[in-house]
Image (cartoon, rainbow, N blue to C red; front, side, top):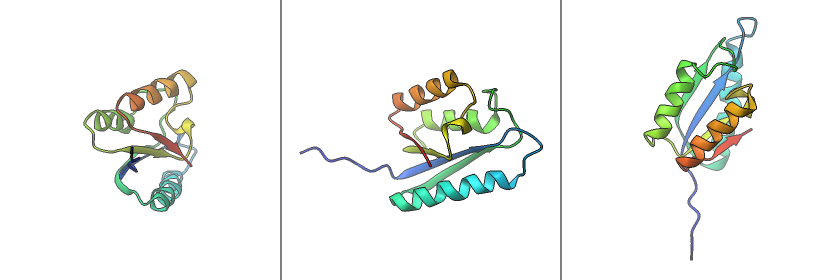
Length: 110
């Protein structure tokens, strides 16, 4: 009998794009993601955030760190408020999802 193992270590990714938005936007995103993590019985392994950086760019420091940590097996699932937090470009979102799938890491959004 195959048993489905529940992901245990969750990473959170949050982002907002302009200086016109508030730093509290990151904390708000973290809060809703943490609620989801707790609701699933997972534990938070890391939280990544890129403040005031456009989702059109993939050269965001914490986004790049998230990708590197995924390759290193640092977490089992990625949680974000929405897919648009990873990028505003659907092609970039698809590439991110493909990379996570390759590493066996589900992408879960609130």
